[in-house]
Image (cartoon, rainbow, N blue to C red; front, side, top):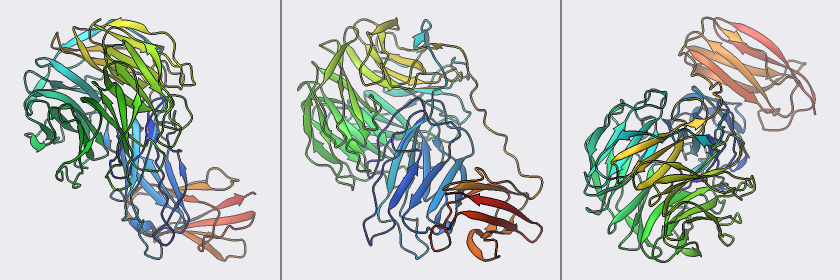
Length: 578
């Protein structure tokens, strides 16, 4: 999910992490020079570190989980180890692997400072997607699970923190949200229902209060409000808190911690900025097309903040609202699509690093694909046939080949269309799979933990959710490591070594200690201090980028890294080759 204040795009080969760049202005704070993984990177390894290099040295004491914030779209706020070379590069190493197909979003806050005490001028946000490890793009017969009365939308996330994919379902006629906790094998426990506002129309899951678990936001069509349900930490939820929005809200999207709501009767989008605690500022409304039914957030113009795309059912177009950089939006620009568009999703459909759009058109029985030009403008729509009455579309790597495929819920043919991508933003003919009665939404996630993308579908007419498991050879998913404390002090060999331009040095602390990790040249002169101060027990990684304490590149040659604590001293050799 992308933040509405300064966020970024999205997508794929399963977990993808979108990195949005917004360079700091001269004299107003450090600027980002490079990011790893790249913005909108696809197929990122589940255990990949996140690295950011600035144009000046960063104070390592200002780098922690409150200033370098990493969220997973399925798992909420992610834990991990932070490191800095006491130079311009900072890194995050996740404690647990990213989930298959998960979107990872990183936010750097203005709490980050240079060694001179100059703060980052504005938050920087970017995303990437973790790899999908398998799958054929073909699906087993649907298995149905009861939800509430007239379910409209289903979304997948780890709601109880056990590592499995759970489901949240908005039920229109019973005015509630059903939570179905996953057993880890693609089956689900009985639904538990939580009251929301009147006419529960849409639900999204995100860590809205920043405490590390998945909360829910739900759009209430009849009561003109959005309900926020905060997680108690175990997959149970506190009573809903409601916020007024426009008239007949039909869709809600969580971009980082902020909310955007499409209001079908007032022809507007409501933006609610998060106060940082899961509470929200007063709604600000922006005009769009006629009868907006769906909204999504992504960095559509590549400038490092989150823009909005809205599907307008009665005007047969999509509105694009570009962010001004502060969570306010420019006037909508409209792009024609098919007849009666009901759903829009943003993803890198052609693999060029830009955010493209896919739109489900209910009356023309097709999906419109609009490829982005990279500046927030779009090429003319190209249409691909689906089933009868497509009302929801999602993008994911369904066949494990590294590009973006589409799944579409067809409300009048009681099926889901799967359109496999050819790799350049074009699609093969749809293959259909039967689901329940009057399906209204589809979402993709690894529901059974075997490393590929499964589907969950909310069926309005049969009051249930259909789960379709991907048929493919199971692959090994990286298991979460056990929570351990090192048994002894250690300084490990650097990798890579020899290196250019950077190398990673790992060290272990069995107890809290004052730690000094210093690089020397062969004459014994100090080059740079990588670590200088007290650290708690744990496993650590730091990067040396081949620069000295003044951020100057050092020449090719042999260097010595020495770790010193009151209880332990060891040195290793580092060979820099240029």
